[in-house]
Image (tube, rainbow, N blue to C red; front, side, top):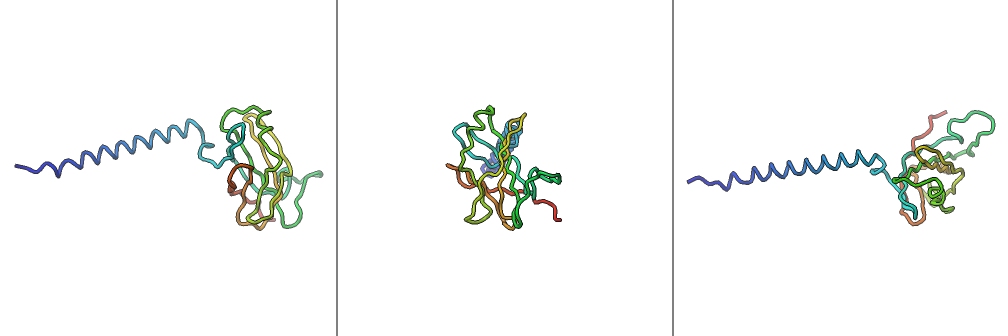
Length: 160
């Protein structure tokens, strides 16, 4: 008489592996269909969720501006650009209404900066917020009322 109990776990283990791989495949397909903004940090507004889809630091506004009339930060500061994209189809008016005046940014300390410039582009609808923040900070965060701080990792401008 042979002991079949030793052979039983292997097929069960194989089934579990197949089920786990199938579940991962479904999740990857769903993420691809929904889009990359699903995996990005976001803020919740009364009008829906806004994903942080881009951040960068620059010395001027508009970025890399060298012509007369550009805004330039004071010594020791940079402009922090935060790009926000709706996760669902918000129209421009709703998106504009979603921005409270108290949105701020912080550069790793108690000092915060209000919005210096707010702009809207489309298609697709994208809002860009610009803040003046300390250049020497190790971390930056978007402070949106009713949400925990959203850490952002902006790309730095090239050195002079």
